[in-house]
Structure formats: C-alpha cells, structure tokens
Amino acid sequence: MNLSVPRRATAVAGLALAGLLAGVAPAATAQPQAAPAAAAAAPDIPLANVKQHLTDLQSIANANGGNRAHGRTGYKASVDFVKAKLDAAGFTTAVQQFTYNGTTGYNLIADWPGGDPNQVLMAGAHLDSVSSGAGINDNGSGSAAVLETALAVSRAGLQPAKHLRFGWWGAEELGLVGSKYYVGQLPSTERAKFSGYLNFDMIGSPNPGYFVYDDDPTIEQTFKSYFAGIGVPTEIETEGDGRSDHASFKNVGIPVGGLFTGASRVKTSAQVQKWGGTATAFDRCYHSSCDTTANINDTALDRNSDAVAHAIWSLSAGTTTPPGKVFENTADVAIPDNGAAVTSTVDVTGVTGNAPATLKVGVDIVHTWRGDVVVDLVAPDGSVYNLKPFSSSDSADNVQTTYTVNASSEVANGAWKLRAQDKAAQDTGYINSFKLTF
Ligand code: DTR
Ligand code: CA
Ligand code: ZN
Ligand code: ZN
Image 1: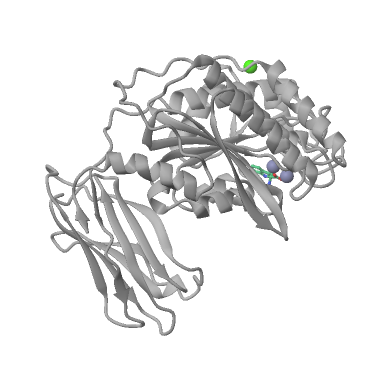
Image 2: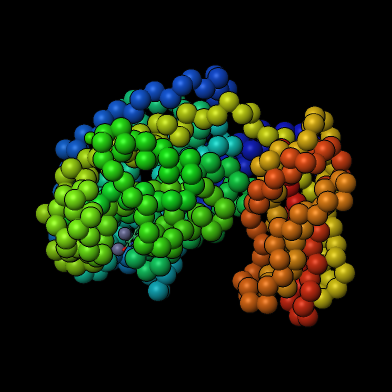
C-alpha cells in the first residue's frame, strides 16, 4: 500500500492504539493547534514541594522493609504514590507491567492531554531503588523533580505545541529493564514521533557536580544555557552513555539529554574550585543504606528541578515546521537467504524541490541475526545511501528504527527504494514496511 497523503488523523489513532498496545492509556485527541507562541518562561519549582515528595518516598521505604527496589512492596507503593498525584492533577496515567527475575515490574506513564501527537516530548526518571536502601538521591531526586514539574504543568494549565509525556521506570538498577521494555513495546511509528527524551537520575547529590549529558545538541544547549543563566558552570557527563534510562531511548534513535550530580566518583580539586564541596565522592551513600532524605543537597535539587521545568517549557514550545508528508509501503517483501537484493518502493509525489537534509527513513525489517542484512536507501536517480552495513557479529533480531539521511542533493519526487540483501547463509526474514517522512 503506497500512501502519499499526510496521515494526521491516522497519527492520532496510532498514538491511541500505541498507547493501548504499550499498556498506556491513550492521550486525549489533539485539538487543532494555534500557531505555537514563543515559549513562556517556566515557573520556579518549589523546593519544598520536591522535598516533601522525598519525605513521602522515605516514609514508603521505611514502611516496606527499608527499600523501594524492583519486586519489593516498596516499589509498587512508590508507583501508587506518584500515580495518585498525577491522576488528581488531570494526567492520563497508565501502569505498564513487565516481568523480570520472575517478579512483576511496573512503569508509570503519564500523558498531559493536548499537543501535537506527532511531536512527543518525554521526561523520565527511574523510581526504583537498590535493595540496600531507600534510594532518595538515587533516584528519588529525579523522580520527585519530574513529578513536581508535571504538577507545575497542571497548575499552569500549560498547552504547549508538543505533546508532553512523563515516565517513571521500574528496575533501572537491574539494567534499565523498565525503560527498555517501554521502548521495545513502542511501534516504530510511535518512536518516530518522539522529539526528545529527558532523563534525570541522581540530581541532588550531597557533594554535587553539575553535569549535562552530551547527546542531542539542542537538549544539551537548553540545559547549559539555563545553568549559565544562573551563573552555575557545568561539565559534560562522562560516566558513560549506557548508565541510565536515556540509553534505552538513544538506542532507537530518539534524541536524548539529561542532568546528573554525580555518584561514587570523587570530585577533583578543580571541580571543588568550580562547585565547592569537598574532594570526596559526589555521593558517598551511592547504593547504600545511608541514601536517605539526609543525603540530599538542597541547592542542587532546587537548581536541577528548575532546570527540568525550563527544559520542558522551552523544548515543548514546538516548531513552526508542520508535520511532514509521509509515504509508506507496508507490503511484505521476502529477503532470500544469502541471495539477491530485494526492494520495497514508495512513489513520492507532490513534494516540491529537493528532499530535506533530515529525511526520516523508517525501516521495519523482521529478520533473525540482523547482521546478515545490508540495508540501503536508493534515491530516484539511483544514488545509494547505506543505512546498515553487513555485520558478522550483530546477532540481534530485526531492524526496526528510523534513520535520518541527508538527502538534500536529491529531487524529492520519484520512486525511492529500500533495498535489503541477506549476505550470509541461515537466518531469513522480510521487509515489513518502509516509510519516508519529508
Ligand atoms: N547508573 C545510575 C547512576 C549513574 C552512574 N553514572 C551515571 C551517569 C548518568 C546517569 C546516571 C548515572 C544508577 O545507579 O541508577
Ligand atoms: Ca526552585
Ligand atoms: Zn543506582
Ligand atoms: Zn539511578
């Protein structure tokens, strides 16, 4: 099926369906949007409110064996606590269940009704602790800041151009399990609608540094300019990309960013000069029983909570770029094992001029041991853009992602092909769908 009509209506239905599929209640159907106004300034996030959430999470841990870990009663009690506040504030919430280590885990997803369903801005934090303690800095701090920002959105009656979604993840401490499950359950069509995911994991460390993730440049700059505006120097977070839930989103091509105040690493003397504190661990109670409400630096928590709100207000204002034209072919095309290349074609019409420098190429190939498969985009004039090379070691299944291709030298209209070739024996599959968004 080759469609060349913008599918706004379908997109809204898709969001609703995806929400149901992913165990998430659908957001309200988007209302016609006025031209997005300039972003209003974010409100101050009251530190007292954030600290009250931490006190409540501490009480939950105290009442449930001293922790809020995956599979323990304290975690589900934490989910119920956050959900109740969001329900009361008018969010559309859903609890997504998953199983890990034989026990049930929970993600909490909250959609703020309204905004463009084709542009989803999400902020999240893992809500689970380790089993050794209450996990107030790790990661009550991120959870409470995201919660209070969501409540501030409600208090302000914010109606941004983009659709706002908030998430609290389960089982991060066991390997980003909850966020991986959430992203894995999202159809590729839904993933393509994310304009960004903002992650907040440990943002109130007692001996704080001010670290900004260096992933998506726009998100990074949004945080950097906030801190520059309050005269606080920042550094790039260098503890490794895969260390928190943003990695789950980054791995499927969604722009990510976030903030961090440090864990067990030791603050250098240069950093002491920059931020104050002592040349000791940023958080000496990391993953320990002393990670309680006493293990928080109020200034860091306040500054980072306000930075969360600044990013949400700024990045959700939307762009003036209207949603792109979508062309899709969903006919299955079998890929012969270790054989000839096959193609799926979309005929692009009605797009003036050249293709964009950020042409979105949605690829959905179902194939065991995906390393066998070479995937190319072939432009109408025959130009080839390699999307995925052969890999003798990539044993994972399926190629389900959105590539961004600089196709600005190509005339937009014409027959575009997705070409797939299986170049190693055993393991087979098929092209499930091919989508171009201009
Ligand atoms: N893995 C996180 C803490 C953590 C350690 N390094 C980073 C870097 C960026 C974000 C978080 C972290 C945890 O223990 O939950
Ligand atoms: Ca504040
Ligand atoms: Zn941790
Ligand atoms: Zn954490």
